[in-house]
Length: 370
Image (cartoon, rainbow, N blue to C red; front, side):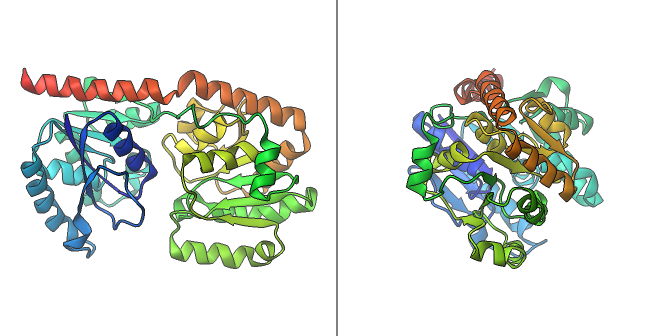
């Protein structure tokens, strides 16, 4: 089977999707609508739209024309846009079918905050799709509210690779190998971009250290917005110098990422909006209790005081108090970590959801052929 995916080539979701279907012996074409700054899986045929033109407001006119040319040349069995916004517009503009859109979170959740034109073309793209998959129940409700027929919307979780993301039998040995010592470790697990509010975590750090002086913070600094990274570095300059904060740069693979989840005592994610964040699910799968924003989409995965703790959006005091509570109560921390791992194992097995996604491909193809 030949599939054509439109999406951000730097997105870990897109890269994993591409890799998974290459391993299934699919022919995979990827149309990239962001400048590539990572290594893509071997075997993918990459079409870089940004080399044509990358001027805001003008680029989508050229990219839509080029996307149509690429898709007509490739003649895939299915066209799949990995986002309702941007990728969804381009996919809809090709006029190609069967056409599938996957909504991941902010592409629909924040749509009401966009200008009228942005909202209008996103709704148009959704209506052009033969099927829409969403990574959470709340996103599926949003898609239906935007006019997608109920029978053409389905929740399909991205899933977690449980062979990689699971609790470690010996986290202390991993800590020694990574040079992380024995102090309590708190991990910020989201990209350094304004949406994810990592600066709120940074501002909570001194409050945590007042209560737990030996705590150390690790912050994933991959896929960083340069301006946001500079602001974070300025905020944390003294704490980085003293070793209280470690900026963790790009890691080689999922196994390396999993090790940080396995050794942290608390994982923190406090974005302004979210679908079903894989980073949160993966941390939970590894047995990390989570401190997360009080968002409706996360209630499918986290019950307050069971798998983790909810904090109000933007409440730095609440973030620090939740972290301190978990650090000071080892039994609570252990129980939440066990609950989190068990929930992901029950509900987010990647093998199961990958099979459902593949079945949707075949169903759409059969529908076209019949």
